Image (cartoon, rainbow, N blue to C red; front, side, top):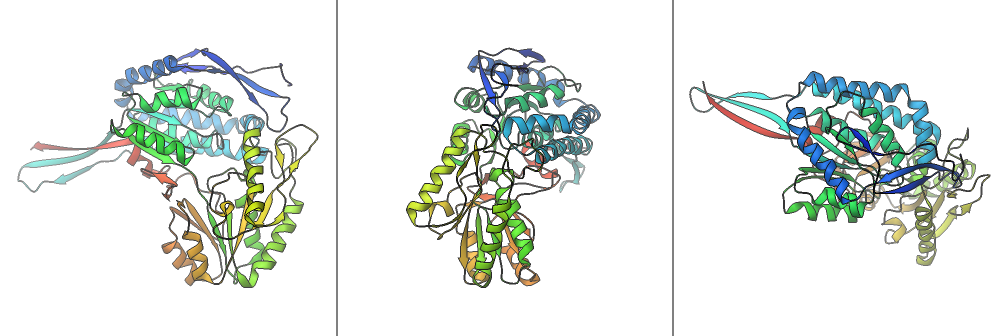
Length: 483
């Protein structure tokens, strides 16, 4: 399908009805920029307010619905996502540029998340405690927060919305979902599935458009009780400021500059594989990507040589082509930002080892080769999140020096260690200043049923995923009664 041959026209879902937008936009395939994936509806402030009003009106019914009704709706969504993972994976690969195997795996992950929270809807717990006063009963229960705004990024357009929307609905909240403008069709496809799962009108609403108009309206609206956001640090801080006055609940996931430490005792082939997967798969467009490779001096040169060999053999191409290991960058603006960091690295005196060039392929797209640098801790390419297939190697004198370098960052999402030493692995898990640690595993790759989140500038608010999601999507009530 080439420019002008548009098949899909995603629209907003407001109060149970599909609605055209105030304006329209187009979604382009980054693997072939001649292809329009969809022409989609873009909302204005008025339509966003209508979606919020629908969520407000639906809240009393849904918040008091039975756990079984919530579980059934989420289970239906999960089953359909799993059944259609190949089809929806194709859509994801076309719209975002993720390789087809990665895209299919992401849709399956989204399906499993919905099924997990279908179970959690039936397990919403509470406590009954003895009072310190005679004849008094104390009950502690969890209740929904209210209307939740979900503002999702483009890099995981099925999985990240799933791990926000599923718990919100499971715990009895209503939702207004804004997908990123680069991936509206993925957001619409998820919304279309949810629209057929038995949710009352207004319980779940899809609104597409810009962050400046739609996003800002969601963040500032007095009837939005909670905001769950994944994106940049600068936007996250603005959301935190905008919601503070009305004391709305806020959950922010904002990125990382994650270290992978490779010690001299590590299995070097395993360490190189961890670095390759963690730094370059998904085109490096993951907040958990290991963009700082901290390597102990005795194996530094051998590690760099082996990783360079692997990078030279990495197949970069169209996301849907069999055998492609790294797809294109998501769009032209992100590609230009990546290339600007290549220039910054050179200007600062970092040593360029491999890659970082714009690539030409059979189809016009946003292609670049994976890049590797030797850097110093103060270089910008070693400190700032680039969000592309660019990693740098830092030399460490020993384990203590490596850990110091790993913690020397304003971010604190995740950190990895490659070693055969149980002593160092145990120490690292305790002393790495992050929310998640990985030992002999890539930093990018987490389970869907356990907490996700970081520290410092990476995260704010309660954790996402797993049973810990209840901390954000519910509020605790303590009730006293004279027995």
